[in-house]
Length: 158
Image 1 (tube, helix red, strand yellow):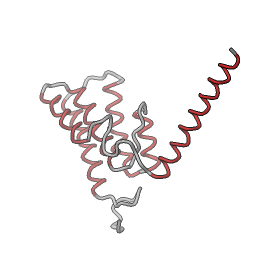
Image 2: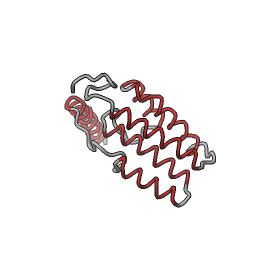
Image 3: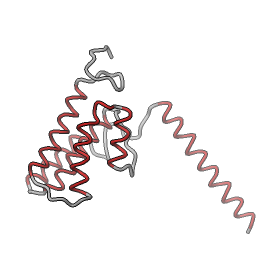
């Protein structure tokens, strides 16, 4: 019995060490499993889904999809890494640290999303439009951003 416990402990230790090693390799090469998606959807796909919810008057779901589109845009632009289980506030903290130019629109969208999704606040077309505007703001910032991480509108060559 003791031998089985030692063997099981050794296997767990080996798995933990392997996972850590793989994370270091992935971080050093900069590769990601899904470079342009969030939860398997592109930003455009999230926006299409949001529009379908809007058409049906499902404002809460539309707001959520616009928020996810905004995050997918940041993931695709490599401004934040998708981490399964990461909370909206954790995404905000990561963006604030690594790409502060995006903090203000993401914070506004995060506040709206959390109020609707977790706070069960009523959601209407104006709320959805506000998050859509934050998404457009993020896309505009991304359009003016150089390839150098964290620089915005400097005109520096890529």
